[in-house]
Image (cartoon, rainbow, N blue to C red; front, side, top):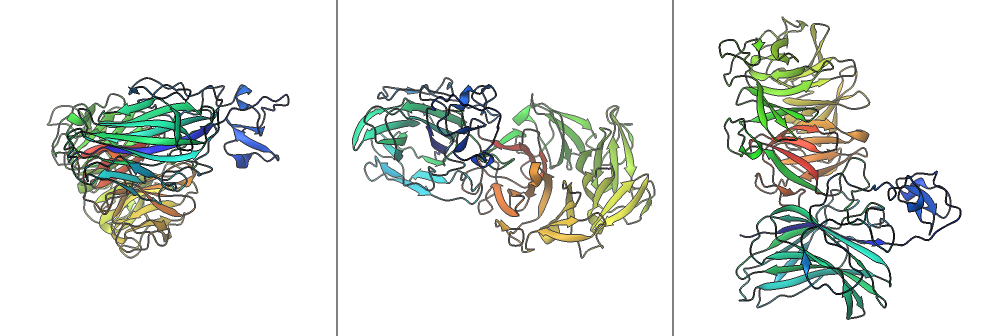
Length: 604
């Protein structure tokens, strides 16, 4: 089946701002709520009186070229002035502005134009081959929606000339207003004359007065389209038009939703007004073919077997690889994969991480990794029942554990652990390790091992991963209970999130369902991200206690398809386990069952 996925379409009004002789550039802002004086709005990051041109402030987002989302658009068209489009464009770079003035955000904060709340119409069905729009509202990213439009052809197009249709929605317009339409496309398969195009048409009643340039795409992958147009004289309506052209016997299927623009960033899709959460996300595979094996190579040519815990240092992503008995590194810039510890033989030996087979250090199912304050890499050596350390000189040693599968606190060299998983460090540099075999969290400090949390099987059941909150409480993936637990400074354990029933359902802290949660990471503002492994999803718990699904679909089969994230997107996950957040907000994760390293990132 041929599929085209299209996501995130937004139509944003740009308004020309008048001049003012009393412009005050001293009050910065993020939203209108930051502007406390009556009659002021937040424009381009500055609180100004309504109608004042904030772009004249030297530190406004327009003056500094701000408003970028951090990821560039891959395809855009030049703006028009309301004349009818006479062709198409699939390349070039949008200037991000227009003669109509600075862009004013009207979606994220004032969601009066979203594809999942507006009325869409369709024309162009031919010969009984009907296009089928399916508009779905997603609970994830409630501020701007989450790829919630779905559109497909019911059956193959049988017309000799192919099939074409236009999906459209409208908003009021007046002469001289500038509109920017943006689309994030996720094209799975497309060839020949099949295209998806985007334009803005301007009408007076039923009469077409003009249109922006039609920008089209027929390239596989995720990309953006942008078109800008100015309403000509007499305009009463601006109509966003998504035009689909399908060749004979082709099928088409795509996803879409509204996006917002940041002030002053015409032509660049914006992000949701929720700290740390992009408005629209995609899943992308960085490394791994998907088959189990071992091969140090570049990107998708590399082979993994059971990638598990992750740790990030600079642009290097460290990977604990259980089935290959190795620690691998993915360079996020070059996407080259290399081995830094382990020789592929399950065993125990301290020694150099690299060198002759007879002396090189050995691991047995290394499961998790974390950096300590000194920059050494800690390794949960699962089947060696130890916490190991790889120092900066490339030597593999032992931090704690004597190798006996058991339980004993005491001197680090004499302590006994069961199978060992998650690692975390507190503000004092003390090391915490999940002792899954004993249903405990152990602490290593000053050369001694103590039991920090758990009672051996009631408070915790099969715990797997750890993450500290800014407040100092320790989050624990209570995998066997299908919950996220929390331990206070004294080690007292309580349920933090999840009802305890098995499943995958968004909701509140007490009603949400998890299915064997594993990897944990805490982001800015206290947002918590969870790799919900058996549900094949990535989840987010916000500061208000709402649990939402960011990527994956628990109702669908597991898989490695990249693309639009969320329940209503086509991206699929396959046993997500390790999880780490990069400084730019990207979520890197290991798809353990899919033998790949992937990333959840903004689509633009």
